[in-house]
Length: 400
Image 1: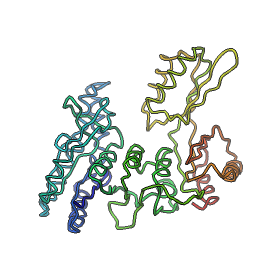
Image 2: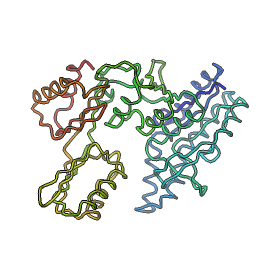
Image 3: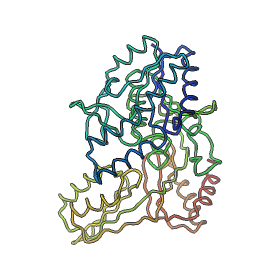
């Protein structure tokens, strides 16, 4: 069976007019003899509104009940889209996460997909229906609704495509993946093809076009992704297998202004407790590549790590964790930082890249606080300066 999974994000379905437009695109695709599974997000900022609503009744909402509440956003979109498709003469059916048999595990508000029983979806596809699935949710082994966290609809779409052995088309408010996020720099180049590793590095370093967990899942199950605009017919970006070409190249530039550095000073705890604390940091999502440990001979240990407001929520919760776990002498929080990341295959094999970007920083009078190397990226943590001029200079230097 020739199946395509499509996913439409919140900006693509933020009102009825846009949902009607999306419905017409779906019908056009259906006319190409494609069997369609459509994953939808909540309309616009519905999820944020539901979170705010929950805070009106409880400062710390019960997570099980919060999941029940938040899941209604995507279900609303799915039902409305199905109604519109039927009005336009296209047979369709909307399912809940339970009806789509998306099984999850882990804690509420941040669960993961354990398995998908595709039998129900295939049955409806064989009946000629467009199957509409709400993203971001599933059910656990207790039969409770759970949600997957921010970016969960991307994960739902990729997981379904993996289970159905098909391509995943993700439609959003940008026309593809760019060398620089068009929302912060308008003259970046659209990338026609990017491999999973480079896309993962872009996403992990601040580019918000596609959830990094979805990319990891796509890489694991070799799910090809096509990312394009919901509102134009412009060619998008294909995300797929690692390029076989052994060459060093700069693919893109990512800017993360939500970067916060936490410096934990004069820790007197034992080595065993420090290791446990580092494991705790990793478990809550702190990137292992951003953790630096400085051992001061004969007395104390200092730890610094980078986190993001977007990824880790309230920084105060992390500070509370620090004090409860290791009781340091002092915690210093640096919120005047941003992370500039260059992404590309073999990027760390060419020393010239470091030289050229450090010269760019020097020419802009910018001091580098920290450098983070991974296989496919180099990140520089700097103070927030004249971002527009800096980005323009880097783009020019590396022809991005």
